[in-house]
Amino acid sequence: MNESFYQSLRSELEMLKQAHRFRHLRTGASNGLVNLSGNDYLGISARQDWIAEFLAANTPASMGMSAVSSRLLTGNHDFYPLLEQELSAFYNGRAALVFNSGYHANSGIIPALAAKGDLILSDKLNHASIIDGMMLSGAEFRRYRHLDYGHLEEMLKERAAGCRRVLVVTESIYSMDGDVADLKILVELCRKYGALLYVDEAHSVGVRGARGAGCCEESGLTDEIDVIVGTLGKAFCSTGAYAIVRPELKDYLINCTRPFIFTTAMPPVNVNWTRFVLGKLPAMRQERENLRTLAEYLRRGLEQKGLRTLGDSQVVPLIVGENGPAEELSLKLRENGYLALPVRPPTVPPGTARLRFSLHAGLKQDQLTKLLELL
Image 1 (spheres, rainbow, N blue to C red):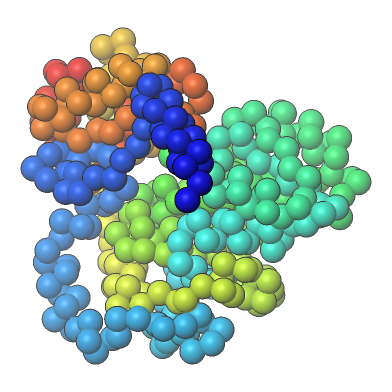
Image 2 (image 1 turned 180 degrees about the horizontal axis):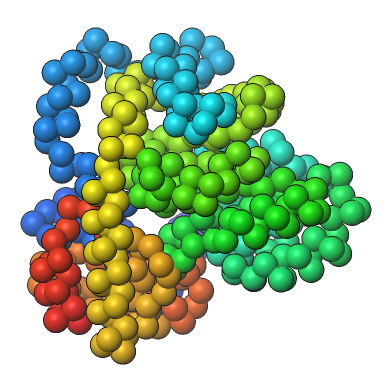
């Protein structure tokens, strides 16, 4: 073995530790703690009654534990078209295509849509999966200042006319700042300059909109957006992701999206659980309202204490600044019964390390009152 290689790894790992950026895997991380670091926004993982109802009608053995191949071979089991039909109905009849994860979707769809000679304009705080998709595409890509639509329009004016295809990519709710994109302005700009609009709804599906169909539904713009990507591992409490598109684009993605083509399909039991949750989602209005109320209460409480926070969603970040103090605060909260893990560079910009309080509808207001007292 090349010992110098392993020595270089040890040196780099030590540098990460010194910078308070070393990460490790945890087991049972939330046992006995108030979990403020998950993405189970509607609290579905605690619904033992739902799990019992699902298993009473669907045993894993009867559904199948593995798809055993990709969807284009033999893995397109019966639950896939059923789920896609139900997602289509959830989105006013638009076509749906299911992926294994949000990372698969973003890193695959973007390169399928854009290539050399095209232009991608991306919000500066878009997720790593979007950045990787842009890099894989071979297209020219530029990042406009976060939620700065004047800057985006400058780029569209300067570059759109000379490109074969222009793709504007945004998230709807941003996972680290908790703020919300203005989809109305984005739709208007894309229409004006002939660009395609791609919206990642990972953190808004389930929690926004009258039926839980995200910020696109809430803004009344579902039919105006070329690609809507939703994830199933957050508010859905399942696994996977989906794209909502026009039928011809669905056919194109089936043929041209590499992570879709070359990945073993999800097990039937997982896909059918997603169908079960999707059937419940429109009626969860009270959970969505509870979540909004809790987020407003915590954000207002932080601001009253003079603490720096951001956003307008169920993601409530507390900006600490440096990595070491963020780790220390997280540890102190853990000692007092709260799991709020630190988020550090490169996930967020240097100097903005934070605790990201990721709320869920099962929390009680007095739990947040105690948290504010501790802070």
